[in-house]
Every structure is written in structure tokens, then in C-alpha cells.
Image (cartoon, rainbow, N blue to C red; front, side, top):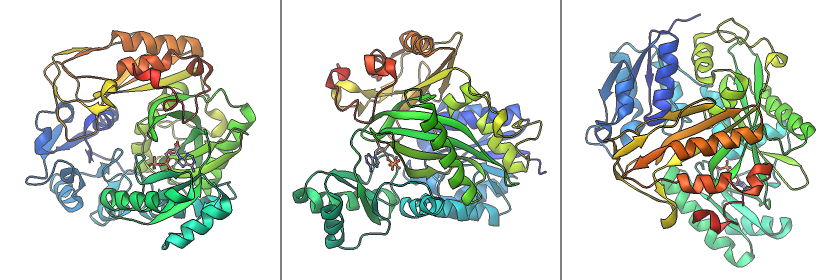
Length: 459
Ligand code: ADP
């Protein structure tokens, strides 16, 4: 077993703080990096040490410079790097270069990341593991004709998607032949700009599916378990807004099958560390694999609340070589994992729902947190006096609640969002409350088109 003394977090904001907390609990020193734009951000003060990176770089590029980050880590005697989510977290070259520098990358192995990082190759992995995928063409489309032939045969609507896509970018729904080529080309140029990769594929568009995903945890000794599913159907522009567990509106058998399929995929490629296997579920309750995210996810929190497993601590322990059934991780086989109660996560962002969710910036002049039984706030940069800059993700704080019943968990979320008082910048809390107060949410029945079909939520 390795013993890490220092872990560098190659990230910022709430997820950096989440990892620093786990480090401290495990008795490991935490090292932050921050860009010039983040000099006044709270997250860096939560680490034991912090270092400026990316001088003369753009605010985003500062967190993307592999060589600079690894050189700094070596210079500071860092044993391991946690990539968080976003930025370099799904970059196999980063993982490989960490290894070459003698630094442990806290995540799956680079060759596994490579296979899963691309949506085309991960669909092939799923098919080889005998897990259903959405009908489509599992190879990069090079000509307009190929796209047209598939759409003609499969029937509209179809979805054109970037193999390297993420954050809902690089994908377009195409409802008729006349829009196909325009949408295809526009998604491709968006993908090229956002991901530096314009490899595109095409598949059937499922009408009003649910997005159900499974948390996976594997150790370095070949043991893999799932920590049950999350329902992430409440999305805006294909990005998650509210997540919860369990996905209780689905029959138990469907949930079990989805979790079993997630395990099949993970086992088939020798998955280690934390990951998420994502599925769409159609109206007839058929489920289809869509992608694997080989990293920690924003919504890991709801799974932690219901399983009592600290996923970030587990990531670090796994990277040190601890088996899942070690006393430190404490997972004595799949059957030992219990899912208790319900948990909801609301993503509070500095966005203005009345202005098409435009990110708001400026000084926070009032910040009153909520708290109390069943409430967990995972935040980053929110406090009275904080400056919200336009450079990064607008996630301000995640409001997570855990309750014994669904009704009580919603009540805790509503109470907690009302208690949270933020002044000086606009936030989406009113919008989140509108979502929580709908009949559909109380039934757990929302699908991925719920927000789009309910413009009254924006008021
Ligand atoms: P990203 O990596 O950008 O998050 P995903 O492939 O995970 O993209 O898809 C994000 C969301 O887009 C899904 O949760 C779903 O709402 C929608 N989506 C993706 N593929 C399809 C599809 N074939 N049919 C219907 N909706 C889809």
C-alpha cells in the first residue's frame, strides 16, 4: 500500500474543496493550484498550500497546462493528483504523464480512459459487454451522405453527436431531412472549437427519455461494485439541474437491470476508481447505454448521502492500493451496500432565469447559508464579499438533502433553498423552487424534456 503525503488538486471551486476535505480527513496534505483570476477565490485558502499557475494564460488554459501542473507537482513533492471534474479529468494524456513523472493519477488507468473517453468507442465497449445501446452508427461520419443514409433508414428524429462531447455541447436533435446537414455541420464546428476534435456520429433520438446513471467503484485488485442509480432527468439544454436517488419512479427490476449492466461494462474493461455509467430509459422502460464518465461527478453527493460511502475518500484510498473490503473503505461485497432513504441535489448557480439563464457576475453582498438536519451544502466561492467572475462555471453551491421519505426530502430541499439568502448577484434558486413544487417532481416522473416543456418554471 502506498501512503500519500501530499495530493494536488488540478481543479478549482467546489470540487477542489470537496477533495481538500477528504485529504484532511485522511491525514494527507492538500495542495491547491489557482489562476490569476482565482487569486481571491475562497477554494485555495481551504488547502494546506496553494500555488499560482498559468501566468499569461487565459483563465481556462491556466487549469489545462499539463506540463506546468506536473512540473509544479514534482517540485512540491506531490505524490498524487486528483483531477476533479471538467478540465483535465478525462484526459488520458494527463493521466499518462502523471504516471511517467512518478505521480499517481487518482482515477482509472489511462488506457481505460482512452476507450471510454470517446462516445463512439465507449458504445462499442458496451456492445461487446452485451449492453444495449441506442441504434446508430458507431464510427466517425466523414460524409454528408453517410449521415443522410442512416437518418433515412432509422427515421427522424435523430441526434448528431460529437464523439468527444461533454456538457451538452456538440449535439443536435434533427427532426427532418432539410435540417440534417445544417445541424450536422454546426454541431461539428462547435465540437471542433470546444474539444479540438470534430469526430461526429449519429444515433436515434429518443423522445422524452429519463436519464439514469449508475455510480461505480472499483479497486486495483479487480473488485467492482455499484452504489445504485441516480435520476438526472431534470436537465436544461442537456445539462443536469436537479439530481436524486433512488430513481423510484422506475420499477425495481428495471433499476436492478440497469445497475447490473453498468457492472457488466465496468467489469469488461477492468474499471478501477470511481466512475459513472449513464443510460437513457425510454417510455417503454427499455434502457440504453449512452456514455461512461471516468471521473467523480458533480452529483456524487446524493449517492454518498444514501449509501454512507465517502466516494472521494474511497477514490484516494483506492489509488493508494486499498481493496474495497479494507476496513478503511469498508465495502464487503455488493450485498453489503445499503441504500437508505432519498437524496436530492439542487445546483444553485449565479444565473438569471428571467434572462435566459445568462451568467451574472459581481460582488456577493449577502450570503446566508442554510443548514440543519438532513442538509448538506457543498460550496466553493460563496461568501459575503466574494467576487463572481465571468470566467468559470456558474455553479455556486450544491444544496443536498437527505430524508427518510421522498416527501420529507423535498420538504427539506424547499426549506433549505428558502433559507439560503444570496444578495448582489442573481441566482436560480426561485427556478429550482418552482421545479421542486411541481406535481411531476413530487411523483419523480420528470423526463429530460420537462424543463423545456414548462416555461412557467422560469417565472
Ligand atoms: P454530454 O457528455 O454532453 O453530457 P450525453 O451523451 O451524456 O452528453 O447526453 C446528455 C443528455 O443529452 C442526455 O442526458 C439526454 O438528455 C440527451 N441525449 C443524449 N443522447 C440522446 C438521444 N440519443 N436521444 C435523446 N436524448 C439524448
